Length: 466
Length: 84
Image (tube, helix red, strand yellow):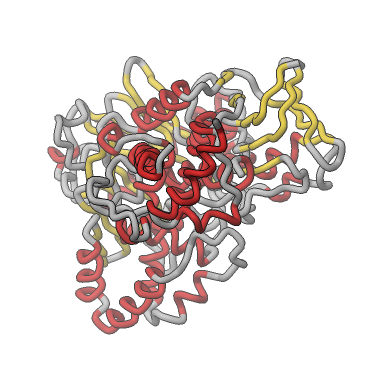
């Protein structure tokens, strides 16, 4: 039987980052990934020769090279990856768009501050106080108790529209809970999006994943693709061995799973609790990706990198009642970063909205295609309300269109309900009822590209390298 | 190993962990944290590199001994010399 110091479940960003740390310090590590492609929730694929990203709109947590104490430089050091190799280009600017109100922001925080002062002049002092509270909050503590971010922010800001306009981007980029967030999560997201910022490699997510794979190879890590873990067999206290989808068995001193908490507990035999799937999140998303011959700039969409929109009086972030909740969403234009070396060859517009898992999984294969075709146009029509007027439409002008639904996410990542941000209740310290089984990634609770890598690093450092 | 050689060993490790830091002017008596942007994760890496590269164990209770280059050398030199 194969034997490892650490078996890692999942070759996503967190599993790869943990694997690099462990292998570098001499552990015999193997990553088991069920899919044929690495990346997990942040991955890439090609259709008819065109490259697509899934997951990454923009990398959050961008800070200039001279800033040393921030998540981005910290993970680069921990993984021994050079900043130059990431090849990041900064966003142009982004905005939260509500009916009649735009709040612009960029990688210079003063833009958001001045926008709050312009649109909500009565709130600016209270907003500044909130920012000071966020800046002084220690978000590295792994055992902070749950605190409602809605309540904390309501203690600072009075105007509910401003509150919603701040919550909208933070929730869309990383809330697993409906309509509220844990305040520590809110702080992490606020810093990563507003105080730090957005950037992207010209080549997209594949550049980051390839860097991680290269490092993992260099330090001697082993990786098995198309090799899913079916069972984690324990004696009730410790994980004893893994049973693979093929039926083969593997032994490991410790197991680190990035599959999600419900999904990991579901693998455990004997079961750790009666209904592990009750832990799974419910927030599913649809995303359409539309490729155009023209750059978005040519149809008058050259200024915005990301637009977070909402048309309702109060912003609701909860499981969609319909197949897709058209009231709010995210528009991402990957062309609109300040690339120093060239530009993406074609225009790309990605549109993301909340969706309903149960409905998307209820159709026959034929009807599923029909519904996708219907809703991708409805999503476009909803999003374009918040953009400058244009004759261009996805229906008539797109060279290529693709779309994912919660069903797609579940199919390729095995995350229950296709819930991208995982379980509402995170296991921040990574511990499970089994003393040698740990959780990293989405359900440990650091989200986003940088967060996921930080999650793998932190859990590896805390539990597996001491 | 001399005290100065030991300082160089530590500097070499820091250079690997934090290639963006300028190590040309590190003052031995002053705390490393005050001169360089090193956080607790970086110090943990120094400890783990000492183990990996040189077989030197630094128990958690002794992490404070690694505060400055001088205290590193005073603490680690006997450990290096005990190896041979």
